[in-house]
View 1: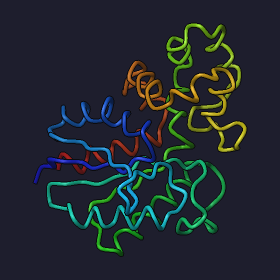
View 2 (view 1 turned 180 degrees about the horizontal axis):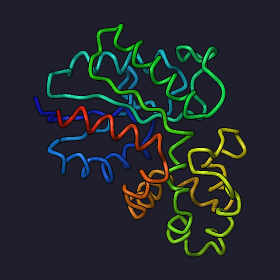
View 3 (view 1 turned 135 degrees about the vertical axis):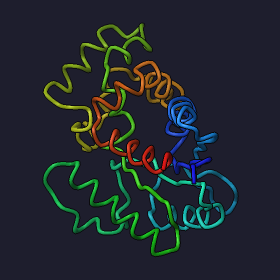
Length: 227
């Protein structure tokens, strides 16, 4: 049965806008008529943003999935590995080594946890190491969005020399967003608008070619959506 709708749990407004601007048109071309980003809400109705607690996120998202799951609906997530909540399942025992191995193990833990709660057709995705890694695919596109910041692209390229975008670490001082803000301070207040625009200008094919874990996530969704 073809998939008609995809819901994506988003960490915040940046991921929400990215889903609307970049992912939704892509999945629409595959026949999915609606791709909807969802940011968790508190009981008061105020959107949380971020995800400081795994259990709080799970409580919201599992209830949402159980309410809306249908044979024609898929669910996924666009959450950062950076600053992952300490109550995430299996975090302490996650394997070391290449980041891609570690993050996939954590995603499998999350999927199993949700499935045990009755949530089906959920494809967990943790972005290596945060959303801004996608933007580091093309430092020139970041610089073009901030033309008043001299040498922005050159300085960003120098800061990640020898690293693939998804290899840029999760240290509080050198995570992808921290590197961008260090070179372009304005980005800190414009993340939710500038971030998705930059990603759109780079284009999904280039993002996928440079970010294998991100590509694998979309491939899994595409395969499930077009069965």
